[in-house]
Image 1 (tube, helix red, strand yellow):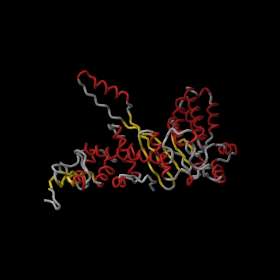
Image 2: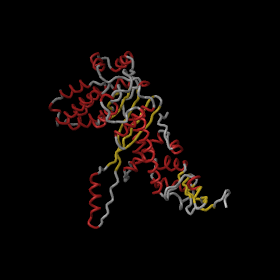
Image 3: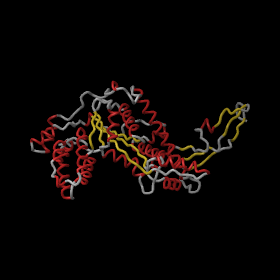
Length: 437
């Protein structure tokens, strides 16, 4: 008999906990008065469990997910944590760990999606198909640039030829002051998609339907990773889709008061990415796309190999072409390609393709040599490095294939770990959405 009347009963189902000290369960109790439950420790004292689920402690999530699943295979992680907890037989199964990790990543992704929507709405940007009158409403009218004497001195260090200096000064890409700008690197990474399992049943209807669905899917799952970086620190964002990630980047800039800065985007030459950037960052008065030097060099190398006869000719042309482009002299580069000796050309089509590529990319090709002298970035390798940390190092091993939800969940948790947000998320169910030093 309980104080104040009523009967105390033991619940039939034990309360289940997966913690860093072990996997265990214990009894819970309920208090009934007049046939009604007035208190149940399984719901009122402890977080309610769903179906056959387990309560995961913050310590377990940190050890099993951040230091486990995000970095190594589920099988290795399950074996390690169960060995450390001395639970080789009744520990956490590998498949359960996988489901727990994916569920946590999905919850975090959903939270970030809601956070993004709330921030955009609070700034009147809830309609992503905003009218042209709403565009270019953010940022300063004039970006903060390196001083003219500083730029002139850097150009003078690069060459003594006055004609070359004039062409370098005419390059349309400016030289931003790092303290007045925010650097954004964007890149995609793909991992192998799991094959859809087919079941042979009567009539073969289900098998045919699943076969059709499998054929319509691509062989790879693509994750977009973006890094936002200033002198204060950096923040990494990821998601399945370029537009989704870029809107999240815009929300992050708004939330951190970075919209008064010039936006500098470091990307490769992918057309669809440029179009997506134009759609999102046209809200800014000042933003600039800079073509990553590595991708420019790679593109030139590939197309000259297809266009020119022999290794000797190709290397001679490529060396001179890259020298011109390193100094941002696109006009001279196009003229040089147009005047190549006919006997050097094996196939004119790749050569015309290269000319078109350089012409289209002209507004995004800076004087790389001058930027290097000024201590400015020339590469999107920051974004590619985040790709390695978020996706490639964990998900791109021989024999590995992934479901969309599984790949995205792991990537989301990996970004939380990089941003030093994981502990806060496990504790409060929220993220700070602030630059990590």
